[in-house]
Amino acid sequence: MGIFESYSQLKLFLKNIDLAAVNRLSKKVDLNKLMGVVSKMSDEDLAKMMRMMQASSGVKKDPPKVNGDFYELSDTLTEEDRAVQLKVRNFMETEIKPIANEYWNKAHFPMHIIPLMAKLDICGLTYKGYGCAGRSSLLEGFIAMEMARIDSSISTFFGVHSGLAMGSIYLCGSEEQKQYWLPLMQRMEIIGAFGLTEPEVGSAAAGGLTTTCRKDGDNWVLNGQKKWIGNATFSDITIIWARNPEDNQVKGFIVRKDNPGFKAEKMEDKMALRTVQNAVITLTDCKVSEEDRLQNANSFKDTANVLRMTRAGVAWQAVGCGRGAYELALKYTLERKQFGRPIASFQLVQDLLVTMLGDLTAMQTMVYRLSQLQDKGDLQDEHASLAKVFCTLRMRSIVDHARELFGGNGILLEYDIARFVADAEAIYSYEGTKEINSLIVGRAITGESAFI
Image 1: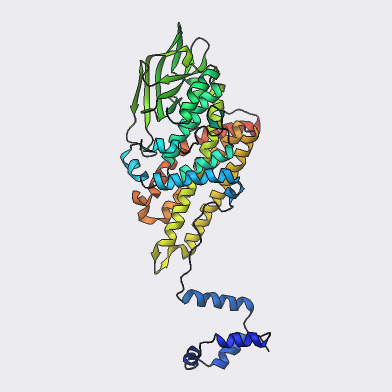
Image 2 (image 1 turned 45 degrees about the vertical axis):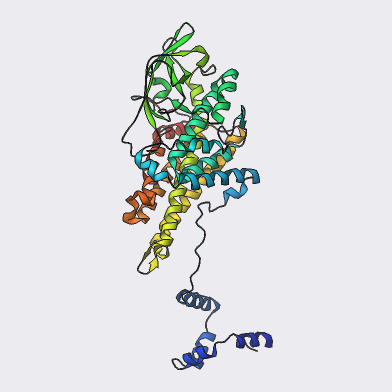
């Protein structure tokens, strides 16, 4: 039977032959000669020929789904956690994505989203008690990623409130303070901010805070300035860290927005995270009652505990920013045509996309393990610092390649990618610069401190 194993196969073959097409072909080529050539071709060459014929037949193939989770890490989540992740994704895509560029461009915050976000019930996700869910750090990381995948400004707003502000009270507050503040903040009825950085003090915060606090009877008096304080233009409370000259130790305070001597002024003309409302805070003989001093914040080591916890979240945020940029670029290359073909079909474009995906996948697997360490209680400063260094560096590379793939359109806000490029610069710098985090890791692996 030759190439046919049975008469049924031969009958099926003959049934499907387009005789009219064969007749037309016979007028153009010698069919016997053609069949002789085809019969001598290897299986590999035949497969290549079939692919070429399909490509030229005009049959349009649906492109693969745009998905930055190439190793399907989301599939490892429990069914319950996966539902939370998808709930946040839906919120970001339906409520935030349509308005992200508008509010970023105006440098305004969409206050109307706060009650909508509160319904997600995800504030203080990893804390136990006080109305919080007590869920895993891994899930919290996925949520940070989902937010930054659409808008890093919203991810930053949430991280400041749920991570830095709530985390300061959770880790450093008395039981009474936790019982009072955390349920209100979990429901987002009260919004928090976190005041550590100063106009002249960033990386040197561990030993160089110039904002001071002094005891005055049943009150404390705070003097100094804070800078880059996210949410502070509208927050109800701000966690202020100040140095007590008497013992030279850093202490924490819950400062209410109506405290006498507290003033927050919006910072203007930012090129990144424009939706985030950063403020310069001036404290002029600002009186804070003893009951609003964080009772378990007695040195900068306590401050560092909060930063260690939230630095892991910033690494996840970098993953989200990188993933959003990669997915935007991939989608664009599939839609944008030049020379009659989608630019995704060009070799150099595919090379850039694979480079981006490799970086993104490395970032994802790193932060995944980071959160596992956090859930086990084994997270160290150097673990969080390495993730922050590596992920923010790779994030910058990804958004740079993504903007390149957009060509001239990449500088137009309407294509979204320009916002990602700008916002990546802020994520790269905050929660410890590359240099400071590198020194933390360097100290851990060498046993030698290179800090000045």
